Image (cartoon, rainbow, N blue to C red; front, top):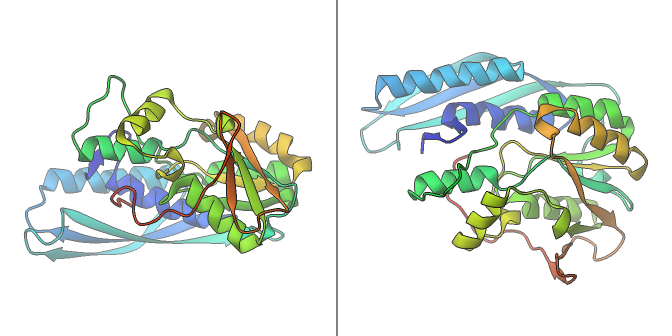
Length: 277
C-alpha cells in the first residue's frame, strides 16, 4: 500500500535512507529522490506523497538536493516507485561497524519490535484487529546523536533491523564479528497487540520488519548511560537491553525463551513479508 497506518511510501523512502546513513554513525545532510510514476496515478496521491517527503526531510534535518521523475505505462509501475540516495558527514573518532562487536558488549533495542511489518500486512491483506496497528517509521539520526554523545567510543555497532527484522540484523553482526549473540525473549519489547497479531498470522516477530527502531551494541561500561539517554529521547522511550555478545557459538545467534529453553535464531529464509522498503 502507498499509504498505511502511521506513514506512507514518501516518508518511508526518506526515513529509510536517513537511517542507513545514521547507522554508520554519520550525520545525514542531503538526499536525492527519483520517482518512477505509473500513468494514471491520481495527482492528489502524488501531491500527498511529495508533501510527505518534504515533511520527513524537514524532520530529519536533510535537504532534497536533487531528483528526477519518469512515467511508465498504466499497469507497469504499481502506482509509484521511489529511489533515494543519502550522503552524510562522519565525525572524527566515530567508528561504527559490525565487526567491532566484542565479548561482553550489551545489545540494546530502541523500542518495540515488529510494528511496521504487521501494520503493512494488516493493510495489504485487509486484516482488522480490535486495536490500531501503526508503523513505527521514523528518522533515527537524532536518536543516534544522543547515543554517540552518551556512549562515545563505547558505541561499537548500530543497525536498523529492517528486512528480516532483529533476527537477521543480529545474525549479520555475529557473522561479521565472528562472535556469538545471546538474546533474551522476555526482555524484547513488543506491543501486546503486535504480539497477538504475530501469533494469529504465524509470524515470528524477530523476523518482522521495523522502520523506526535500531539496535545498539555498546560496551558494558557505557550501557547504563546509553540506555538512559535513549529513554529520554522520543524515539527511544521503550529502549531495553535484550541480550549480549558472547565468546561462544561464533557467528550464531541464540534466544533464551520465556520458558527457559534455548533455540538457534537463523537468518531469514526468503521473504516473510512482501517488501515495501
